[in-house]
Image 1 (spheres, rainbow, N blue to C red):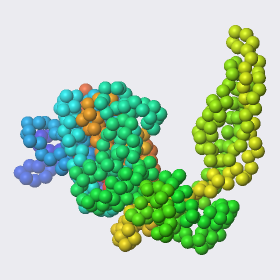
Image 2: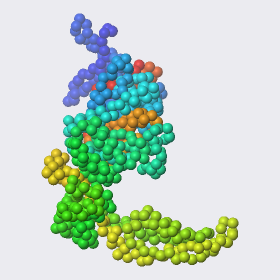
Image 3: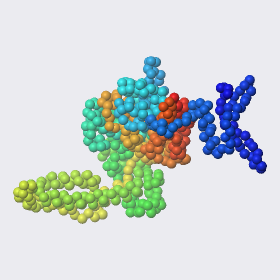
Image 4: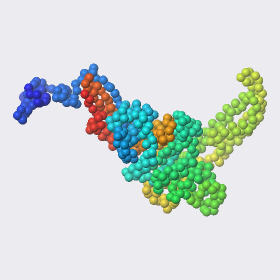
Length: 635
């Protein structure tokens, strides 16, 4: 038999009676003098579909097709499974934002791994597991990142990681500027509004010069302050770590200097929480050569300065209505009073203040700057209802506390001081946020006889707290401002039409409500990215770690926005999304002593829906998997 040929499954059609039957045979095809020949090796007769399939596999094996391997079940072993899909997504969305451009070309051509490579790996690997920089060295081989990035396992080591961290920190400001430019150029954002807020990050040690012991979001801890500025869509454009215990109100000046340095003239409107508000901060924004426009909220206790401009009797009428059943009636009453309907449970009006009243208010406080700023009063019927409900619940809790406190006082072993008893009651009122409720009480002094732990009898003078009846009138003053809050802006009337046109907002309250996006940003950084605790102590390393976490968050929010904007896939949290995607791994299987194959877990319907929504279906395509050596045969 000629050696230059191949095995085939040949068939012929034979007619028997009224039927046509297909008969199969194993044959050898070859060429002789450029003419094709066939040599029948074995007649197989009629075959079922399953038999045909098996014969074809066997013939492919005989023809030494590398894709076909006959194996013994006893010899098959699963050698390893490695994270694939999160790594492939990290690589894709890193390139989506063109982040390599920021790091540029390396001057040292002998480097087998670049700063951009390290930054990409550290950013992506947080999707596999949030861990210390040292531990990523062990994690790296357990992922498909070596194949995807082209960076060998040997090249990714601790010394390289820590050397590159300082270079990553140097690129922080360029990264923020690049993200804003890309977001605007590709219309991911209009960038007309920027949201600014602070949080805290807990430290695991005391060595870092930025870390300070003090009050943080988790109580008193050694911490640093995290500063973040994002677009309305959540894309981060500036971030920094500040010294622990830095007061919120002291960060605006620092931010303005950074904005000047990084962005130059900035046309966006800055929106921030009332915790950042101080008159000094607002003046800093207003008195620059290029004034920065802002939108923020007024402190609750300052609304009382505008009491003459608020029709409390009308609001009292509205508060007596059922905010759910009487929505139409409430809307009609408030619109007649000059309020505009902004959204569900939001009515607002710009306060029109006469010159005489402005002077009168400014005599009481010089912090409102009424000539430069505009004030918008908002009323929320649901908030008013809930404030009243919860206040009464807290008063009931206070009454129960008084009963327990009287029992403690009755067990006194030493004389109780009246001033100390009064201070304890005042602190409890403040703690329960009911010190504005008119709660009247008296102290009755009396003598008690109690035994101490040793059984000795002790006499002491103590007090009993007697509460007077708490009727509806006690709540009147406290309830006056329920449901009310106020926005401030230095945007002039003639500027707002252009601003609303560019941003698609209809009022300032819609803008301020998006402040929740930056709260979501910190939540993602904390709960999903795993920004804390900080294990590093060098300032540059600490800053670089935060940069890596923010870049990981950038990829997260990009994915979230794509999912939210796609109607073909259900909305879901990042936790659930990655729980679904992480199941698609690379599996390495030994078929026999000579052959090892690698292949990904078959993508299910849900994974394909998510990838389609992210425009990433190519990540599970045969071409991409073979190109990246994720699907491979090793003999």
